[in-house]
Length: 446
Image (tube, rainbow, N blue to C red):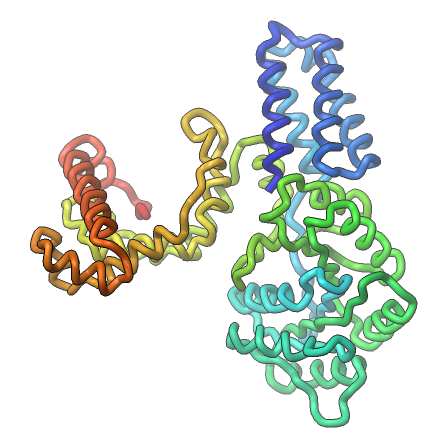
């Protein structure tokens, strides 16, 4: 996400740091390179013009040009202007004073509305709400079946309608009544889409808006379509009045032009981004954190939030004790891998680290998720006694473990070698300075 733009901007700042001092001339060169980087990232040209003017008016001031570290001042200004362009602060969902709060999910066909409805329902459920989903797409074959499957997998309720309810407005009205009667405080209405915007689609959406008085009309767009997504969002807003945008497939968009443009073009905030296929791969959009990531500063706050959500605190504290006392077993190793997988794609987590110093190449690290699966399978094939004491695993046991896990004896040998090396390293740490430090830490390691 934003990889190409981030690399190019960091090169610009590196060149600025190489200058003895900033001048109007080398600042103009830097601004020209920033403009090209933004355009190549598929940012809307009007947005690029506005952003460059904002940076220029601040960066060309005498205070910056004469500063002791002018390049750092420029980075600060670019971050401020990027954050402002992205929306300045997180735009949270709105809720009705009298539940249920109705939220319409709208967008073109194929943008990911149904999958996003499920992800949003899960997010709401995890954050103290009781959502009810309903599909009012009565045109596309199996559209309502798709939402039913999503709801079943998430173990969340869905209103499926009764015989005779074949019109979108009837389904939506009944779903709202069902939510009120069953104590559900949010209704997510998955609407129909088209391959393009037409009068029939907009007329139906306006009817639903008039009937439901939704607190949110969330436009779902595919980030991979770039400026087409921005144009569609603008058209929907002009005709319907959307209140926010959810961009899907952000994990596959290395340019990020849609995310950087959509707030400025539509005037409406980007509220969530989809970063994968799993049901938990939906994140609130934080403009300041995204600006930091684009500039290579990382996103430690999001990293910590993900870790706190996924990692069991008691288990982490116990694991810290075992590390210090060198009691780390193969079973503990397996449990730690399972905890890590809860964080989501590991490459995504690594990309949140600041891209400086020894960590500057972390975003290029490729994590083989299959390797983690293979390691867990090998350890699962061991007996509890073998997991507790790896020293008893002889040749016969290794062949049995390999056969049981569908791997080779070489794979088992490699795992045991890596594990013993890790234990030696932990043992050398545990008695020294690091061990003392770990013992004093209040926060768990994971």
